[in-house]
Amino acid sequence: MLTIYNSLTQTKEEFKPINEGKIGIYVCGITTYDYLHLGHARMMVAFDVVTRYLRASGFEVNYVRNITDIDDKILNRASENGELFSDLTDRFIDAMHEDEAALAVLPPNVEPRATGHITEIVDMIKVLIEKDMAYRADNGDVYFSVMNFPDYGKLSKMKMDELLDGARIEVGELKKDPRDFVLWKSSADDGVGWDSPWGYGRPGWHIECSAMSNCCLGDNFDIHGGGSDLLFPHHENEVAQSEAATGKRFANVWMHNGPLRVDNEKMSKSLNNFFTVREILADYDAEVVRHLLIASHYRSPINYSEQSLQQSTSVLERFYNCLKGLDIASAKSLTNSRFEKAFFAAMDDDFNTPEAISVLFEMVKEINKNKETDSGLANQLGALLVRLANLLGILQSTPEAFLRSNIAVEVNEQEIDQLIAARKQARADKDWALADEIRDQLAAMKVVVEDGADGSGWRIER
RNA sequence: GGCUGGAUGGCAGAGUGGUCAUGCAGCGGACUGCAACUCCGUUAACGCCGGUUCGAUUCCGACUCCAGCCUCCA
Image 1 (cartoon, rainbow, N blue to C red):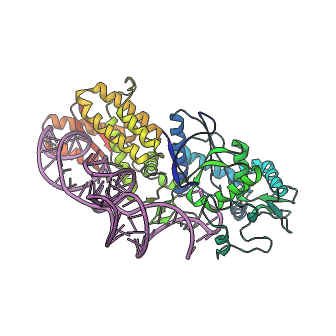
Image 2: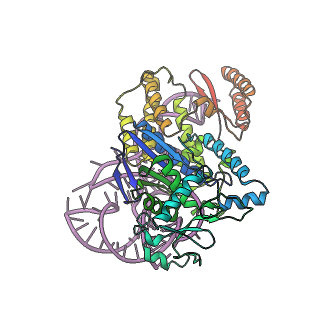
Image 3: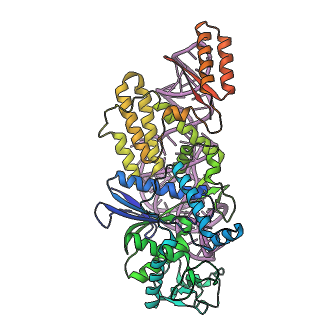
């Protein structure tokens, strides 16, 4: 039985899709004006694991993740660069796709862009105005009228009146109520914008997601996800806009992934303490980064450090060392394995990846024990290990490729082979001094020699 | 100030009303020419104070500390 923690009810609930066997999921993507940082990667990996697992559980998943490609930050950055905003967003969307692919994040089924849905956005605002849930201010801005939506606060648990007291809510003279938020912003005549019944302008951030989720998944859908930092006000506003417009329940389940921290503070653009995905991938294997992101539960914070990357490296080395020498391709598939059951039980419990990974380690131990005595079983378990790990998006490489490469080290296989051969001869001659000298030489090249019954293997030190 | 979540062994990180997390590191063995890999064994934890209970790290309450949101943010 699959259970998911629902932020709306603040409990783990048994998951039941609206339409049997099918799941619609909408996740707030990113605003594309810079490279992906590790916090973005966490969100993408978290929901990649969710969708992979839901599919493995037999559901047909329609995964929608939007792109905010019109926003004041984008416009400001483009103007700083002296380029068209669409050139800027196109460039960073391409970069995002590259980074995602490196991290083995599968593309969503649909990736709607805000600028591609202006019609739907305008239509939704029209409906809200008709229903007296929104109003046009004198300057052409359109605001959502929070006062007219009594359920406001039900997702974030913020109290309507306490929001009023909040010292930091801006009080614009254009707004009727300080809690109101913008749906449509008027643009200067020579600025970026679209024509609308309220004048030339551009959409507010919150309405984009309401319009795009509605367009792709309908009024009511199964799961809405995003970073925990979006819960208020973004997701609260989405609920208000969508439910006010349609009169129906919006998302059934709300999932929020935890933050990525650096020195115990959230990694974010505004704190300027972020590491981009590409700079980390210059030093670490993508699978190592991916492991780091799934080694903690998706709702918990992760504290990023060099040390945590080192730990993830050790973990992957252990996995790949285990797979080394196994014949997985021709292994008969193992059915009804207790390991598989335990793995699925862990994942069924609100996608408990750390526990699922601990099951994989138990398999590693079992495989290593059986390698010599029962290679058939070891191969079968190895195949299962890879299949389960793949559901988490790890162990997608081969032991040779993983263990014999390191982004930070240049590998000259020919030279290594020659030295290994020379050392083999020295060992045959029982010239231990020479053999050790060659091993030191290899070590200087970051090559670790491993002597086995059938010759010496090697791997690259990380 | 309001809302939300957290505090687990040297580190990372699950979980549970009584009996094993798991990984890294450590310790003792096996294997090895010596190592590495691997195997066997092993040490060690539940913020603080009360309460409920035969028994609490796990449930309840107070306290301390930490983080997120309340302003753009995954």
